Image (cartoon, rainbow, N blue to C red):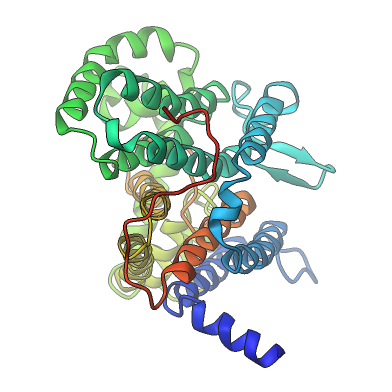
Length: 397
């Protein structure tokens, strides 16, 4: 009996995606170990950052496997609970949230028992994907009607505004990427995207002078990358230091890198937050261009595999969830690499599977669990025209 269940579990498990995710996490753990190696005290085996990462990965894998064997449609029926938990955690940030020492305006973490911190915006990404997919599924036949599309847009922009208010502009960009991807997959007319782009560009001056007037640090970081002449030299050097060290470290790695645990910048603590935001710089310095390409190949394979599961899904909502998770992972990676290469301003965002952030690793595996559940429901079955039923939402006509 147990053997039969085990065989059924193995048969329904995505034997490509899951090992790829494990490989990416193992890669990340090694690089975080290297990034924190120089800071270890005598007799200390690993840093607190690495320990937190490993605990998060282990818990995430356990949740991933559990979710993968449950029909995701059952979980979707619990969307009010998911939404309530995510929103409660986000609203708690305004009262008991904490942020980096240099960012008094930022409240992005909840302190747990004084030992661990949790970033609710990471869980909110999963909650948003679930509720927004349900919303789009409920109105998909009339999605291009203005009176239907406006509430959809309001739904999509609500989490963006919420995370901005907590001072987490990096997560806001990821939410926007998820939002736009899901709208595109729901076949919203291109004209609406164009109109939204024009309105966004027209609103930039107002956003810069009014909406983001309280985010001076982020504004200065953007100026440091694109308009350095607008800043005093001392301010510019302070703001750009982290990214310049990252660029120099990556450049010094060359083709083959300086060797694992041998990076000059990494092992001398010359790259601030290299275990998290700047982990790509550690890969570039110690493993060189070859290591960076290997990392990107693994991540690209994960994204393509997730998209393939979505393409083969038996229902529209499964497709939406898959492409949304792929967009989440891809957007985080692009933004993080852009920061490390000084192509984008430094806004503090983790590299999927690689960075030391416990919240990010945990919640990514929750998302992967949903993908594997969708895969399990579709394996050995041809896609059919299926509409999610028996789920009551406030979005239905």
